[in-house]
Length: 194
Image 1 (tube, rainbow, N blue to C red):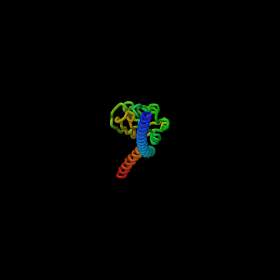
Image 2 (cartoon, rainbow, N blue to C red; image 1 turned 180 degrees about the horizontal axis):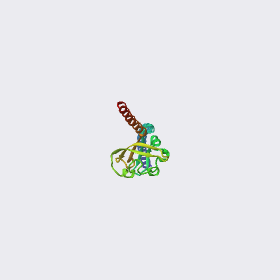
Image 3 (cartoon, one colour; image 1 turned 120 degrees about the vertical axis):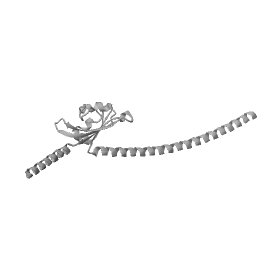
Image 4 (cartoon, rainbow, N blue to C red; image 1 turned 30 degrees about the vertical axis):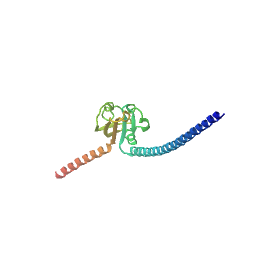
């Protein structure tokens, strides 16, 4: 009987020690869980802040793209139009919603800007500028200043060709008018001297 009581006492003592160890472990885990929760909350706050900053920058860039007077088109390596701002829509007389995220060649001729878009997507040309005439489907003719920049660095999804368009029809018309006026002035001066 005394041996049973001694074993029982020893068992209770071991049980108490294990319980104390489990309590210490539980408290330690509880503290670690609280620390992890605090870190997660801080990370969530930082992530939310970064998302707000990203949204702000995205809205800022979209506003710039929407309100700039120059037409901006970005064609990815696959030939899909990834950017087509409102100025490009106005200059090329194409519906922006239809053109975006579809094949460039579905809406435009390969050499609409005076060069082959397929060839430009294959080349590593830094940039080039040219003046070209554009005739819309309705027959309207416009003079365009076209600047091409090839992006061939970074991820494949960010590579392609940026086309900047500026309608210089009115500028050319005014230059022709000024040239004509200059010739008329010179002709008038010659007639006056005669």
